[in-house]
Amino acid sequence: MENFVLPDSVSINLEITLRCNYRCAHCLVSAGPERPADYISSEVLDDIHRQILYTEARGVWIDDINLIGGEPTLNLREFARVCETVSQWGYRLMMTTNGWWLGSEKASQIFFDIASRYLDDGYGDTNFYIRISNDRWHDAFRPAWLRGQERLKKALLRRLDENAGRHPEILEYGDWIYVDWERRPSAVVPVGRGAAFGCFDKSGHCCPNNLVYGPNGAVVDFCCNGQIDEGFGTCKDDPLFLLYAFSRFLEEVRPNCTECGRRAVEWKLENMPQLRETYMSEFMQGDVYA
Image 1 (tube, rainbow, N blue to C red):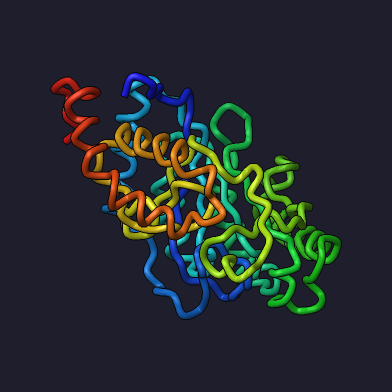
Image 2: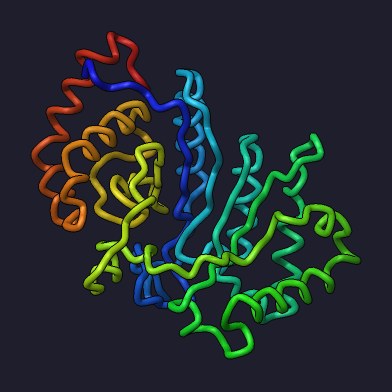
């Protein structure tokens, strides 16, 4: 424990659903149409918010709240509910979408109706950043007129123009929604369906300052930006313990991270009970998260 130092900041990533209308070969969480349609519940969000407040009170800055999936916008009613809740927490919002709604005038209108509510942070700055993913794996599921960066950009500009009269503010924030230009294979990591690939470039994926929650509130990511295993903790655990366990896991397993799926399970079974005991006795000093 003497070597454990809380990070200066963390990013909170919420897998708000695991269902997706695409079934990309490289998907880190094996999302697809067959996955459960459930979205993260209001109760789970309340527990995560409580963890965030506790973490912030201990001097850890919250960088942002990132909404991921699955496809976060597949059920726009549920997406709106999550945005409404999380926006009240007061942090910068980010999200990643495959942009399926670009192909539908009605779906685009609903999406912009939702997103336009959260653009201004109250101080004239952008509060909600939206990334439309753009890579060859997504292209396999898109109609021809939406494949590639230029076609996606053209569709986005058309939908923005259509909605500008209804939401003038969306054109005042030039960089709030964008098509990702990086079409790198580094998004392929040895977890989820991505494990079927033989070569991995995980540079930049391993980050000790992320907490990623699944729809059920389980902490599901401790190595790269992909699902490894539930069992490291949940939204009801002491968040500082989660960061402590995270740091130990990366320290001990990262050198062998191309086998992280198997290693994570083995490491969890071997180390988590003792880590909890050590944390409670040496770090908490009577200040119990409850």
